[in-house]
Image (cartoon, rainbow, N blue to C red; front, top):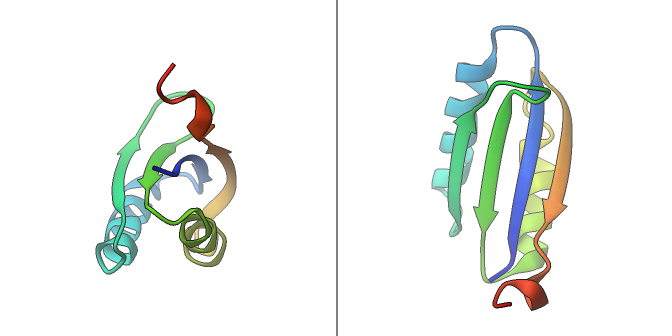
Length: 85
């Protein structure tokens, strides 16, 4: 199943509002997701899974990256061929 991890940097103090907005946006999509605030270089980690890799790319590009107060993102797509090694 196509899976992506998205690391997000946010404006200072905006983590909770971004996490809530991510949850609202993705609640209407037919995908599995997990979102958590983290300590370190990035502020939020988002895991997305769907049967459609193009749908994942579209959601990341057209919805998640356009959330206000998101400064930058780093997207890592899972190599599906290596999932069952």
